[in-house]
Amino acid sequence: MQSTGFPMIYRKRYVPNELIALKDDIILTYTDELMITRWNALKPRKDIARGVSAYFIDKGIKVSKIYDKNDAIVYWYCDIIQTTQGTEPGTLIFEDLLIDVIVYEDGRVQVVDVAEAADACEEGILSTNLLIKALRIFDSLMSIIHTGGFFELQEVINKAESQSSSI
Image 1 (cartoon, rainbow, N blue to C red):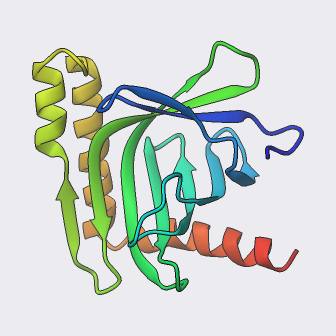
Image 2 (image 1 turned 180 degrees about the horizontal axis):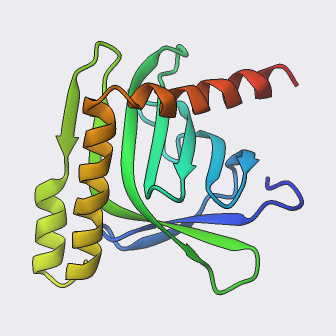
């Protein structure tokens, strides 16, 4: 349930084409540049139970700390996003621009769904402009990861998580 003063948030996906209200996500922090949420998996999965996500709105990146059912960290999942205002007052839509990066606890990095983004553009599902934007954000994220700056993004989530657990 959303707290008063926080926006209602939606996730828009291009593949499959869907718009989902994230009505059960708990907003821990919200500013014009950053939103942090705590959530449970929308659909039951064996590998993922819950997570904490930081939407770095100004960077076009969503970083999620993913937990399994035993509260062990599975990995850090990074979505390339675009944030738009919804048509209703007080709503935000986080558009998933398809390209994702997974950062494992051992430091391995896996890039996923690049071909899916190319296919979506080729099929007219994702505009060329959005694909170009996604690629530029992806490049920026990879630079952050490879220059050791990913730790700072993780710390934003860890700090919000520790503050919310002490309430």
